[in-house]
Amino acid sequence: MSTNTLALLGGTAVGAPAPEPHPSFTEETLTRVTDLMRAHRTVGLNKGVPEIREAEEAIAAWQGVENCLLASSGHAALHDCIIGLEISSEDEVITTPFTWGASIACILHNNAIPVFVDVCPETGLLDPAKVEAAITPRTKGILAVHIFGQAANLTALRDIADRHGLALIEDGSQAHGAIHANRKVGSFGDAAGFSCMGGKLLASAEGGYMVSPREDVYWNAALCGQHMGRSSEEGFPRERLGKYIDSLIHTYRLSPLVAVMLTEQVKKIDAENEGRRTNVATFRRKMAGVTMVDFPTYLEGDNPAYHMLTTNFNADAAGVKKGTVLQALKAEGVTCGQYVPSPITMWPRLHWQTYDGPKIMWTENLRRSGIDYREVALPNCELKIARSIEMGWNFVVPSNPKMSQLASAFHKVQESLPALRDWENANPE
Ligand SMILES: Cc1ncc(COP(=O)(O)O)c(C=O)c1O
Image 1: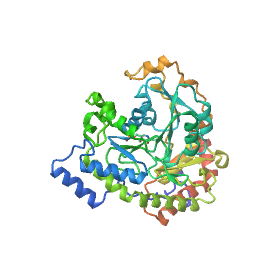
Image 2: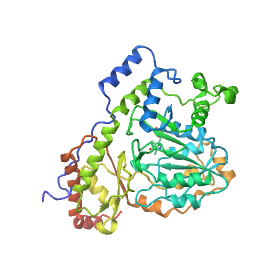
Image 3: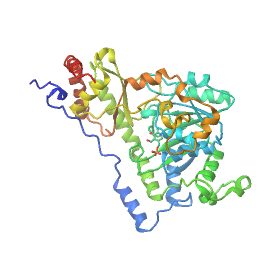
Image 4: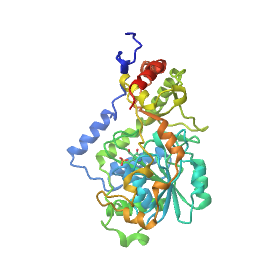
């Protein structure tokens, strides 16, 4: 059997390079975390706790946004954004169907109504032209997600938001340090939420943060997202909100154990993001001649932060199905797949007409609104999903050999497409 026989067809696998272990923590981080534990200091109510203040200031400075509020997860941080902007019952938020559920759950958890519009077929990012067309008198905000570390077109979205008096919210959970128009994402919105769970670019254990240029958003979120813990902070607007300082609200605070992880991770994320970018550039060079996948193109001044690397399967060039190529790549050892299974509009928890699972808080709200998500036409989202192939991208140390090995698996599959076609015909699903 030729050494070039695909592993799927009985040959020897190329094998895939191992990404760096992620998350990685410096010795300083380990010392600081264990010191806190030895000192019995695990509670992080507010900026009065030095580690909370330090992390919030470090993140605000790194993001280039005035106010930062740590939160217990990315979902909590996004909910803090919605709470902070006072987007609530029956307000509409225009958003993307091509994301992780928490981007949408944060809207639903404040009794607001997500309105889905189509995305750009190459990137899966919110299409600003579709956003503008979906604005109604009930629209209060636009929530853009920087999926896979690609920046949404924030210039266009900011412009639409400003012209219509809407709030712009960014979900940067997959995109810490991604650049749009030569500026970091998170600094364009009225508020932005980021996840810092262990799989993300700015990784801790579980955690997140909201950033906002608006003090009122910070205090609204602090007041209603973190119960009374923040009321002792300097600047707390007592006259306006004093009577509402109580614990009848969410508990989205973060432990100082995680706060010190974040402070220390911020120090190395820029170098790690550059390493990821260098590896993408090397990989793309080595993929020359592989026509079965295309890479998205980005606006001038944009630079993704590669949480994942998204590509688009080119069925015409391949002449076989995407599923067949995925099987062949996986057999060679490449970890790859399709991240978003279907447009979120198709997820049964949104179908109040037919939902019969455990009770959830938004079903009745959606029923009252009469919205039928099953009817929303999203051809570009469907196209992106049909073509999308993602790879995790924890390749933070620039490595020519690793990128060569990864690309060689793709070349091998590309060169064996005729054999793969025969295999596909002999193995119909
Ligand atoms: C785009 C996006 N938004 C929000 C979240 C939610 O973050 P968390 O899991 O920390 O709540 C995630 C997490 O995977 C995400 O990928």
